[in-house]
Image (tube, rainbow, N blue to C red):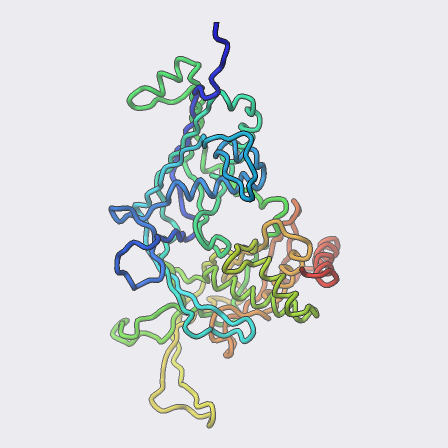
Length: 459
């Protein structure tokens, strides 16, 4: 009698279905397609039929990274072992047990974003460094389907596998990031109407359900209620700030404007507030992160840090062109009205107006005094106390109107007034409200993080 057991024997399958919803704009760019399209620097990845889609490989990479940061062995069990660098061998090689299908975004609305590289010293745009790219606007979605193939070899890791699948289900429903510029507010998505079926092929009813033409439900069938879905709190080591602000005046993050386009029979303004495809006024994550990066450099300099020390600290925290940082921001919708304002260009030498140089801009203005205009969310993944201290000082400068956002700062635009903030760090929540005294323990804890930044080396 042959007692050998085939470790590749298939014991069952787990299927996950639902609708993947974009909670933020998505940027997954295509490579060189051979087509002559010079209207954008980066184009959204599309299928042969021209439909934007999220490749299964991108989903697998994002989910694997989440699991790998928490439990590397579980990532190898589910997604297979990877070739190690430096000649390191893998003693237990496995192929991936997960199959993730491409997600077609049939209702996608294509938008565009543009940006420019800012000089860290002068705070002005660098010549010839403007760029633009296509994005899929938030709100799009598509059918999600994934399968997990369970083999006999997985039996010895059953406990680890169950815990990992539970964390993955929470991640899918709570939200995760895919694509480029994820630290700048792009690529956040979540799975809605999630249905999970666990087919155990040792049970006849599950085998019959799997082989039936219309794929019946498994004995273990679970449909999750989206109404009961609550956004999970940040990870224990993440430092996250969510703050409400009012505009102190006007705000403009410039959008590209066609100078020949007409609106109501009149010439379009020379500059207007940036909007998304839904017509909402927005502060893009790229703009917010640029402002905070520049302000962070100013803060470190004011604390007496040497320039090379400060640059190394900021590059490690916020990333470079070669490495992704851990500082995260999200795109923000501004609840304010856009109004056109006529202006005249001024001669810098005489101080008088330049003849025939009348122009207009269209910033947004707050609707009522004291009301919330925008909610900003930013923070650091797996933050040290020094990094937490820097985030607190950034919040302070935004709160007091010392750090302006957008353009036309020289005429007082872009400053904010803090109303309410919630800070999450190491499982604790700190709340700040305008006009109210902070709790003594909150002041002591937050001041401790700032002190750590001041006293310790920033490298």
